[in-house]
Image 1 (cartoon, chains in turn orange, purple, brown, green):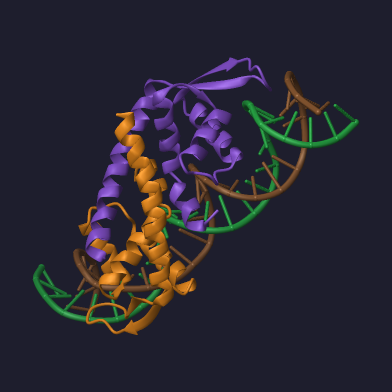
Image 2 (cartoon, helix red, strand yellow; image 1 turned 135 degrees about the vertical axis):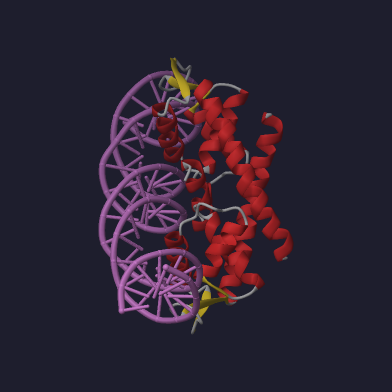
Length: 109
Length: 109
DNA sequence: TCGCGGTACTCAGTGCTACCATGTAGCAGT
DNA sequence: ACTGCTACATGGTAGCACTGAGTACCGCGA
């Protein structure tokens, strides 16, 4: 993956995944697939799973094991109250940085 | 500084500084001050200087030492051809991620 | 029955970046 | 001398995404 992209995903990828989880609970493989559909084709599976471990440890999601028809049991993640709060904060931070960068883009070009 | 902000600045701060340098050449202390004016009040001086060392080593800027009226000589950074190319790439990457996140923000809320 | 492809998760190691704290140094005004 | 502003430098830390490899379970066709 391009270096810039990698660096820019730091901090934002977590928010993106949390945002996906507001729609509906999901499991790792599913989230990876959805990211790919949304254009993030180069995000490795390992990256997503590592991120899910982190947000679980931070207590932003509730986890439930659900048997799968095909393959190992799924770990289904559901956004909880703390996760929702974290996501709100993410949108605030994103808005802040995004506004300032857009300003630079307009005037700079 | 807030954790989220720190992480989200990774990758973007370099672009922000490069964008500032398109306006006019500048030196570290000046860039730090301008960042603060633009709302990035919590960015440490050390962070900026470290970033400037990096972009210099990557050959994105030309450097010139200019004596200062007050204090040590200034290291004035000027965006060169490679820096401009890197900035273009930054805007592409930014646009990509930004578009996708904005889409999530709209539909998610 | 054996391999293959798709599903689903795990983990150790690496590199990059922003942060913190501190240090150096020049100059002005008191 | 002391304080404060200007100006740059640096060593150590933490967090995050990436790489690459591995485990395991299932169904299907050769």
